[in-house]
Image 1 (cartoon, one colour):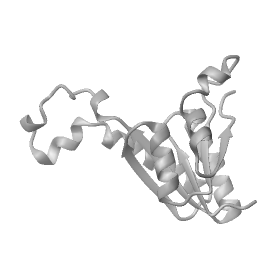
Image 2 (tube, helix red, strand yellow):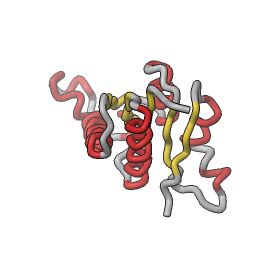
Image 3 (spheres, helix red, strand yellow):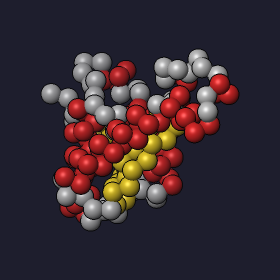
Length: 150
């Protein structure tokens, strides 16, 4: 089977970088568009206790970790491009990581979502209950759980 649109999530970790590399390899092999996405939640960021009205509008984006998420997604793009992928799209979106991946897959009519297996071990069924399992259970397309642990 060949894929035309692949979504991969990254959080900037080494294991996520392995998932991005795997997705890039597949995108190159199939000539697919690759969408690298990072999710963020603004209320968990330092400075969230600062009232938005107390900060000038042009600096309010710094109260979220959107900038950091954009940097992580950009690093994922760099990895994908280094792996030979073409047509790489980058997104940093607010929300739950699994929901962001699922929504992005729908938005881009993806036929594959690649997620990492970080944290998998003896209790895989509990750990996988997070992002990878949610994506696997609700994806509108194929899902590849890339083995990213040593």
